Length: 394
Image (cartoon, rainbow, N blue to C red):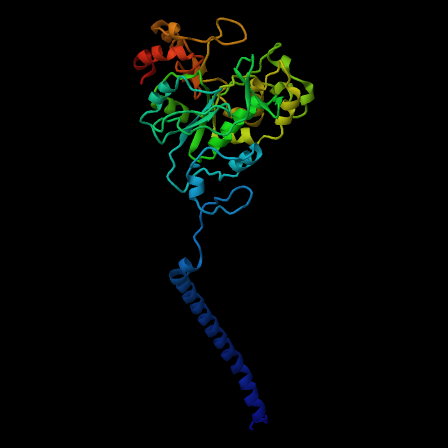
């Protein structure tokens, strides 16, 4: 009043200065309460709600086609019976759809799948029985024989009910004894089809990690433990894949295989191989190279000598040891390796089979190069039994 100012105006001016301070205090209090509420909420969710509300994260076990895995047991446990009515396409599709894991969410003992490609009986089965004895859980056995052959192994045998569904086969004059026939026509790829069929059936057991192809005339050269460790500890798979000049190597190449197969990748190797699970999947999944070999690998181009070595060289050459672990004798000359009967099996012969070898094992020099040998006739069984403790180790 003394200054001549209106008191109402002064009061309003004071309120104007006070209101912003109160608003600021309320805002700070609100933010503080929000922080406390958020902290308490997070604490409550973490310790009381998350484990019951959210499913734990598990390894991805879905098949590649996106279908749900369902019961894990169906993937862990091998098929209860090897006989089925699946076509090759269905079989290969099922084997390809299994989960692919570097680490398994269950106890897994890796096994070797021993795959026998035969015409019928296994005359050397007693020797193999002794080889496998006491090593259950570390191997699987698969037999591909003539559909007309009915095995009569006793229930106590390791070969009991180990036959897989097969196609009709014919014995012909071929260095590897057997060629199969489908639909009444000689199948150019039928030998490889039989081998792929063995591999696919073996892949259905997720514990099978390595795959060995054998014939009825093969024998083991080492005891099971040494064989198992040699294969399992190898960084490479044992398949010959040679770039061989001349009429029996590059001379069998057909330029119609271009562009999928270039002559620089054309390879030759023994039919009797050992491969790991990754390469086994390549074998059954291939649809790129198979048609080329089916159409253009004609006699005297033998697909069983060229298809797998060439295809796997293109796909994964760094995984191949470029040698076989199955010994054969070509010293007698001719189109067929030597066959040995009872009269041939002596200590001197066995020393020749075992001695004088040199190879690379995991990039290091080794004198142990062969784990199996062929070709042995049924008459060799008795002599092999007598020499087995000294030479075979069982």
